[in-house]
Amino acid sequence: MSDLRALEEGERYRCTACGNLTRFDVVHTKRSRSFYHFTVGGELSVEEDEVLNEEIETISCRWCGSEKIEINVDLAQPDPTG
Image (cartoon, rainbow, N blue to C red):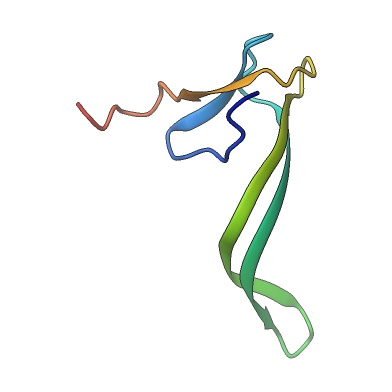
């Protein structure tokens, strides 16, 4: 795969080997800043999570194992250009 990147709104991955649109293994490294809120009882709630940097390392099809993945515009989303 030549375009290793996170998806933008309205996009989805598609396996060019088998046509899969729904199941992918994505290995990524993410650096983020999070706001941790602990209750008095010690239970953690993450209230904010800001992604500072994310790098996609590999994407492979869960069905056939291929790394021949492309990014397609999701046809279920309305076209913003009309």
